[in-house]
Length: 222
Ligand SMILES: Cc1cc2nc3c(=O)[nH]c(=O)nc-3n(C[C@H](O)[C@H](O)[C@H](O)COP(=O)(O)OP(=O)(O)OC[C@H]3O[C@@H](n4cnc5c(N)ncnc54)[C@H](O)[C@@H]3O)c2cc1C
Image 1 (cartoon, helix red, strand yellow):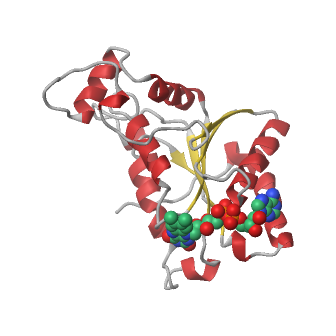
Image 2: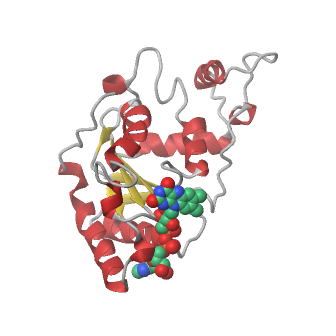
């Protein structure tokens, strides 16, 4: 399989960085092709506006989705957006590796979605959910939290993690056609012992070779 890893952490030596390196090593050892979008290292500019395009459909009034559709028909995406679109077209499985920040993804990753999941290339003309452009591809969130596991259970201090992740699972991944797999979550790695962190990395490495045959996650609708 072709696997795209999207990495959103500012510190390469973080636990998230260790999760990324573990994934690359395990996937390549299993014979898969891997590409990494290291958003901080590239660096990927997360601000979405006319910089997304080399073309201009309306010079007076900027409407992003209209410019996206125009750019899709005129090879008009900026090079850094087009490069990410090419990786998305190439991959069979996409994995995001990130720390949970404010119950969501770091801004650089949100900006990556804002700019790259473009109308005309990711969704549009009625092609959403089951008919989204990325139909047939699988996606998986691999994340870490600050809080412990019990805080993210239903009724816990922070609440059900499935509900926190649903806007991403449903509104970004399923919306554009991805089949969503269960998230890989390491709760509070900074609170864990070295042995626990090593076990979390080993569990991640053990899961990765089977991604093609895993049953999808039941995300649920709103
Ligand atoms: C802006 C912001 C918003 C946040 N919002 C939330 C929130 O909404 N909810 C929430 O729960 N948390 C939140 N947090 C906390 C955040 O989610 C955690 O700090 C983060 O997930 C921890 O992951 P890390 O990779 O940064 O860990 P790190 O602190 O980098 O690593 C943890 C430990 O793992 C060690 N380590 C590194 N590499 C390895 C290795 N190879 N093997 C073993 N150990 C290793 C490190 O040395 C360190 O001791 C927020 C933090 C910020 C900055």
